[in-house]
Length: 179
Image (cartoon, rainbow, N blue to C red; front, side, top):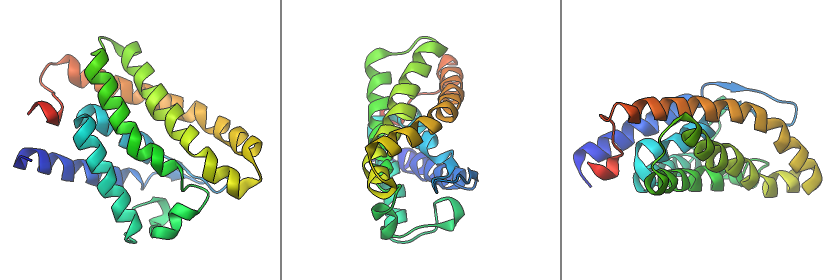
């Protein structure tokens, strides 16, 4: 791995952590955060491999107890809570987004939006259903809760699509895997 790649990954890890400072508490105990979609954006900006590795390091930071989640939370117990299975989506989303961008080569905002909505907003929320259903009284309750997050995550997916489309439209930005 090149120094440029490691530096970019470290800086992006810092962005993921900083995005956890912005959280809106909800009655169901799962805050509305930017971290889910910032992790997803890593797949576009860093590529499928480096984006996924960066998110894995973020998950490791959580596991060892660093306070990198909203509210200064961290520790392995997080993975056994209501948000535990969401982290599967956090890890896989950058890979899927990076792969989709690599294979599809999106040409406009709508293409980027579809990728971020499917593999960011929708995918991450669906991976959260198992742990949420265990802690909330069943799959139906978890699914209804997840539906409440889709509108906000759709807006976040549109914002990320706009960012990615603008960055790649200049031709100056390439994923780390192309460096």
